Length: 372
Ligand code: ADP
Image (cartoon, rainbow, N blue to C red; front, side):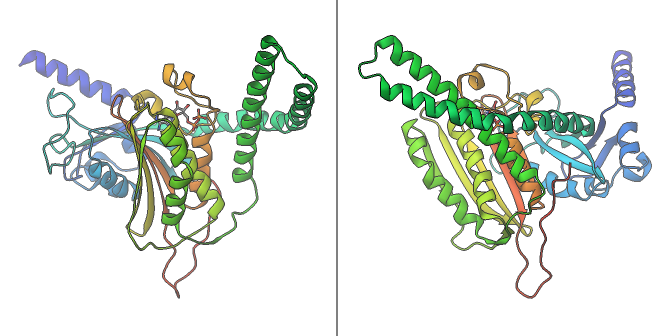
């Protein structure tokens, strides 16, 4: 008893002193614990927060909790939360395992985390964002200058290849090495320029977009790549879909980046599913795979520019670490939000939601600039 009291006191002291804002809710979403950092962040004293819905602290949290509860696998949901205007926090909403029960799929019909509720942890990501912006600006300006020399080298390499009538094995290997190096540099430049385009001042070309059709089209476009890896690729969506006020080519790129990643990181014979659905006035597109999953510590950093998860899986696959940053920027410029839900060894779901255009006669939607 004494040691348990000692342990509880120690835990309470840790919760009080930690810089991270922590809020726990019961299975029905009512706040059961809020630490001082969270009280300050949400400007709500514990007495006013306890026993009230999580959404009372920040209205966006209602939808995030609902999304986490809808997950079929017990795993944390990672997203970015704007707490005050322009002030972003990296948020992780995790199911609380009652006692020391091992992580396991919930019983049929039960929502994950139902036994122990949920815990929300928030870390200030504004400084990280500023550092990231600085890094991106420096790299972007260098990349612009790389475009011309890469084109020149590609031309010269083609000339060299054509002038070698009977190349030796060594010469062939050299040419292949140069080609692969130039291709990688070219794709890095292309991705940086893509990011530049979507973060720039240019407004997206707005029109009524059928995101369901775009998602299905991207699925078909990448079917061959999936089949070459022996993956089972499927698409699911309703027969009828609403419209999103958006830029079709940008939304196409966002879905393609998610699906490309799922195909790239899922080992042979795995499964990849694209799912379009509509909920609460939002068009939702999710890509789920049976790949390696992503360790919890890396999840909060996935949407940063140039971030790649350390480890063998990523090292073996070519990439720039820009694909998800592009997805996030595109989605935010459509006033939407992105998320990832993943557990190591259990695959990943990357998703985004953008508002459906209001029915005819209602006030028009406007797309926004990235919020940070
Ligand atoms: P990259 O060009 O490296 O794929 P992204 O920004 O698209 O860049 O993704 C960032 C990192 O996130 C990747 O390097 C990889 O480590 C990880 N990642 C993205 N999608 C998945 C996925 N479906 N499964 C496992 N890891 C993924």
